[in-house]
Length: 331
Image (cartoon, rainbow, N blue to C red; front, side):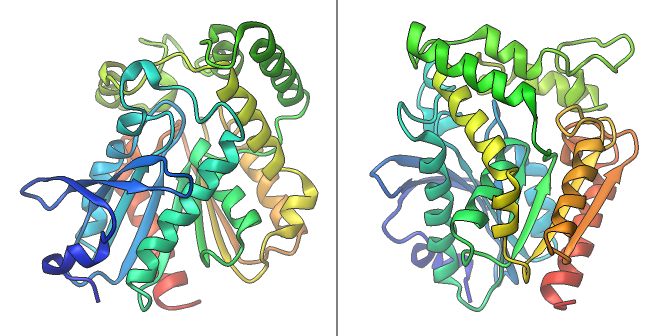
């Protein structure tokens, strides 16, 4: 059982960076190919579960601080890496927006596998749950398809079904841009194709990012965050299109383990999930593929980041109730 006084055992072979009074700390983690990743930790004494939080595009792990501290009160140890090309892992803000020059998506999936196995192996008698948000949900879905024995419980926040023609078009443009203008070149065009219409159902938006939450303070904080709001690079969009379409291919959904437990949750006004329609479509695909241990929850009126919404306490409690039922009680 992990104890705060024995954190050195948990992070053996990793470089300790900093620790605050509330026991939040950062560490360096050396991944499968030697890449250094920065991981945010919110430890608790004698945890009854670990949760691996995987952030979305154009954000970073520390944005899950409030949720992680709430989970701490329930006896859950939370950790969240800054993915390649994001947050502190990117290094400078100029380097944000690119997983890797080559094979970026699969490298990040392997990062998640290595991180999860590292900390789970230190606590073999404690269950681990992975919660992926938006882009992080697609990465988590890739993880369970490519490495099905990694975990038994998965939570997907603000995920989506296959983008269809728009996805294929975006992939073609991204590959063309990478070839013509360079993989490391920022692309406002691709950024616009991905996010350009996300505000369209919001009456009188006050900013370009109102679609992420009804909480104006969250939107303002996001806009002013130095690790958010960057224009991403051509090769990133190549990787993103590959990942989103790959996990939504029927043959890959069929490959998912039918004995594991899955939770899909989203806001009914989240444009990424096509305002609930895409999430419902995905849920039906899961059930049709025999993934009977799947649950879905759409929060009425909620936007993209339900963990940062005006009713976030309701969302936190819903997630914990699912964990209590599926993980702690095995139902």
